[in-house]
Length: 98
Image 1 (cartoon, rainbow, N blue to C red):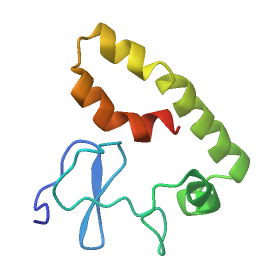
Image 2: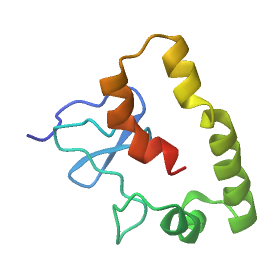
Image 3: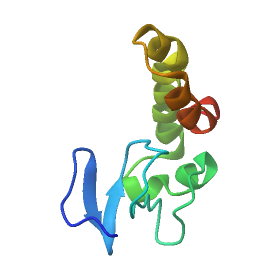
Image 4: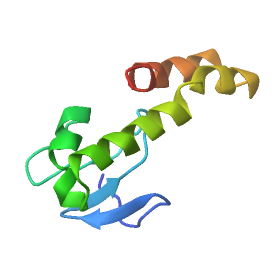
């Protein structure tokens, strides 16, 4: 079922809303179009497409490292906030891979 309205953290791209946040539990149409060719959630694809975002590869790499640093303790923070272990596991594959 395609989304018909944008949510916070999204913008219109092609036929669905391109999200720029991580939501591994989404059950509806959600796409993350890195460039004109892929929607794969892959850091190397993102770096290759850095010019599409008006970033040099070095600058894009720095942004990615900044994000990695910001979320490195995600599990500890989520546990402190009493997020259920079941919900933590649904996010773990994506977040632990960062």
